[in-house]
Image (cartoon, rainbow, N blue to C red; front, side, top):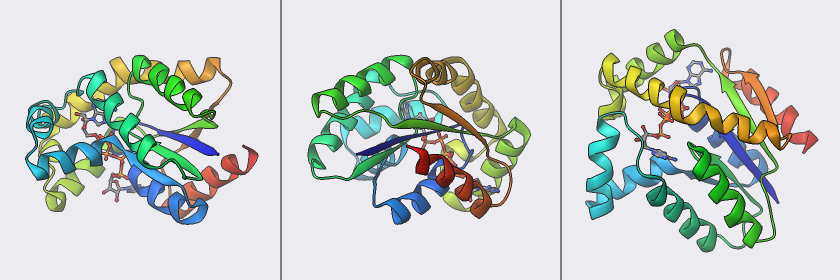
Length: 190
Ligand code: AP5
């Protein structure tokens, strides 16, 4: 199986590149942000609880997102592999993912991190906020909070995969196709 963690700060291009990767490699895309927004749209209790945190740029509790991913792995037992987008976002989530995959006799093939500077991230997210309707894209203050959450809680996840010799970083500034080619080149080595 090919199991890829696509990593990077808010607005780095994880969702954009995931769409192209699922087409090329036939993988299942698991975005915890998309799953949570779907819960919100359906008005579930989980969604209502998550919405308060998401709108404020904060992370949802580990046990909530780990449970969601566990359900998705069970529901896609025949998958050729997965792209994890926006997950794991804490070291606890990364350790839990290793355990879940081990139970299914598989493992993460590698993490690919998209590197984009804060100024570019803010520009992209404010632009997307004009049409996306995402409340967490709506103002610079919330965007900065999301970037701060990423810097404090999520960047240590890169170390987790570096220790396993599964980490590659790629410049996430440039054309979407150029970045996709660079990601594909890394995947071909897995
Ligand atoms: P989530 O939905 O995961 O959002 P995010 O990580 O903030 O990422 P985005 O979707 O904003 O950005 P992206 O990297 O996918 O970029 P995109 O391709 O869209 O999470 C939202 C919230 O949910 C979190 O804040 C948290 O509250 C909660 N949550 C989710 N997962 C969680 C977890 N595991 N644990 C706890 N809480 C969790 O691109 C952005 C824009 O840039 C687009 O408009 C795109 O068109 C444009 N763009 C893309 N590539 C380029 C390029 N190369 N050049 C120019 N523009 C580009």
